[in-house]
Length: 244
Ligand SMILES: NC(=O)c1ccc[n+]([C@@H]2O[C@H](COP(=O)([O-])OP(=O)(O)OC[C@H]3O[C@@H](n4cnc5c(N)ncnc54)[C@H](OP(=O)(O)O)[C@@H]3O)[C@@H](O)[C@H]2O)c1
Image (cartoon, rainbow, N blue to C red; front, side, top):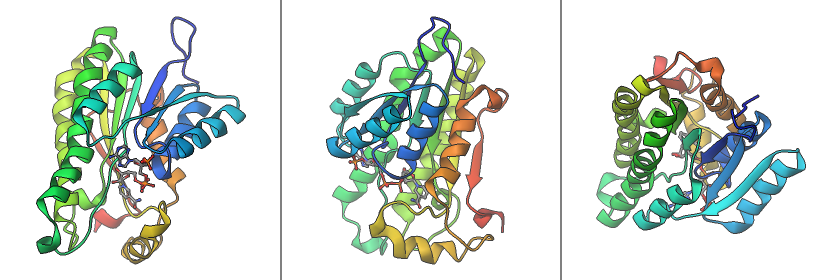
């Protein structure tokens, strides 16, 4: 169980925690003793996640912010304050012919998936470094490591997260902050993506898609002291998809 030296639970900020993988991460970190800042946009889903955590005896609060809005992300970091764990999970995907992606959507992908994570780390990691401990985990994707037709821009946002993770490890780990990335394969989250996930699932060695908790448990491990000697890595959680 996570414990703070001042007796209060340590705080974990999980972006995109109102559904899917982020929601599972929020529940796991609350179980592990963190006070969780549940971030997202939808207040209804935010309240539902907070309630589920509280019903299980955990502590959480919802903070809304649009990750594509730089000022809103600055405000989110200020609202979060001193955090022990930051999980950069929130984001969007886009798959389709490259010629069909307009520049506005391209920018939206990079603003939500890359710039927001950069802003949060820039705002929160120096405090962790000053305190001498902290853990930052970003959610990459197998799309950042293999060529998926139609996934050029999305894959580039995810590869960027992993590149930043290595640089952040070089910058902050000498001060005791661990910085890592998890790269999931296909995960059954939003119902609208079921067909895509099912077709990608058949390309994995395990021949199936993952449930969100199969990803969140790895993130919870990286957030914990059990991973005390792990920094600067990308852990594929993809049913073996990128192994072959
Ligand atoms: N599912 C997969 O197969 C898969 C595979 C590899 C990697 N990933 C990555 O894992 C992460 C989570 O994916 P998921 O499938 O769990 O997604 P999801 O179920 O669609 O949930 C996305 C979450 O991100 C939040 N979000 C999205 N855009 C946002 C924005 N502009 N501002 C604020 N919040 C925003 C949503 O909040 P609201 O709904 O409240 O707005 C929601 O909580 C993403 O980074 C995704 O790229 C997913």
